[in-house]
Amino acid sequence: MSFEDSPFPVRDAVTPPPPPDTRWLQTPVRAFMRPGVVTVAEDASLLQVQRAMIAHGVHAVLITAVGGPLGWVTAGGLLPWLAKEPELYPARTAITEQVAYIPPGASASEALQALSASAVSHLLVSPRTVSSPQGVVSEIDLVRLASGR
Image (tube, rainbow, N blue to C red; front, side, top):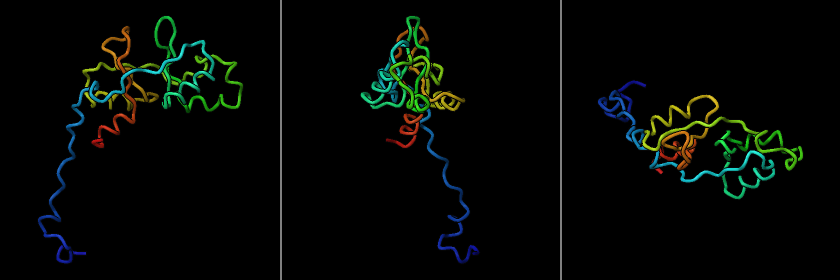
């Protein structure tokens, strides 16, 4: 097809589209994080982890110890344990993801970079790693923000 056959004027056919709107990348994490964190103690059973996921409608829970968070148990990380007796295994045995932090004032761009790292699907939102987290940012939160919803 030549430009003479095109239903579009020549100018429109050769003009590149405008750049994508990337203003959402400047959004602070505190504006789109999910407040609160679903936690389960390290010595709780995997059955309790499963029940916490179902009760709160999440696909990951934070496993905690006296000294602070240990890591995340994800729904995918529970799959190998489903055929076993989950009430016999402690939550810490199914940790599949280490804890990664992001400050509440960080940008969506920084969250995108952190979540793009291997084996990171959740970020604890906290001004310091030793303080209580204010919320969580996951991959789907960035997808929702980028889509404008």
